[in-house]
Every structure is written in structure tokens, then in C-alpha cells.
Image (cartoon, rainbow, N blue to C red; front, side, top):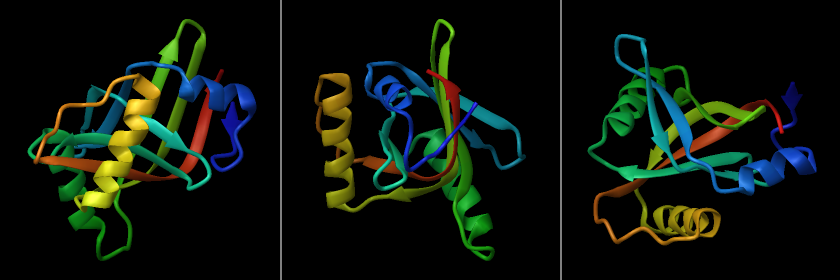
Length: 140
């Protein structure tokens, strides 16, 4: 079932505000999918999903490599985040870029703390995988 990324149903949005481990799928340089567990925050007002990560992680390297390849065409790496619980599931898709500026990282950490009920320990290598969303689907 498709959802409006910017105007999700109350049930869909509520599901994204519950505490769930999610997955992030990024493209490896050879095109195969790399899927890892992550925490995700969804901001429908901005049309963004955010994942905090270490700048040296494989998922960040994958996004950067795909982002570099896409620069000529304008856009970031094509990625998806997903979560599920029983028969409920939700997927958000879009183009990801890596944000390293202090304000973006602090905002993403605050959003993570709100959703997951804990503030991550400080990490000078923390970055944000910021996904500009263009597709939402699921059954919440």
C-alpha cells in the first residue's frame, strides 16, 4: 500500500514514532544491496528520514560512492529504510547524502533520542545519512 511521504496517515506516522529497529539498504559499488540494522527517524514535514552513523562505516562508504557516481546526474544514493512488527511494516525510499555539519548531526541525534528514548554517547566521527524521500509504502 502506497502512502504520501509528506502527508502520511496517522497510523503510518504513529508506527514510525514507535521504537523499532529498522534496516537500511544501500547499494554496494557492484550494485548488490547491503542491508544493516539501524535506528531511523522520519520527518514527514521535511520529507526526510535520518540515520546516525560512524563516518567510517560500510553504509556511509556505500552512500558516498553512489553519491559520487550520481553527482553528474544530480542526486544521492538510492536507499531504503524499513521496519516491521508482526503484520505491520513500513518502507521509506529516496536519495541519501551524508551530512557532516555539526547542526545536522546534533539535530539527528536529538531526533534519535526522542524516538529511541536514549541519547547516543558522543562520537566525533558521527555523521548523518539524510534521505530525501520520494516513496512510502507499508501496512501500519
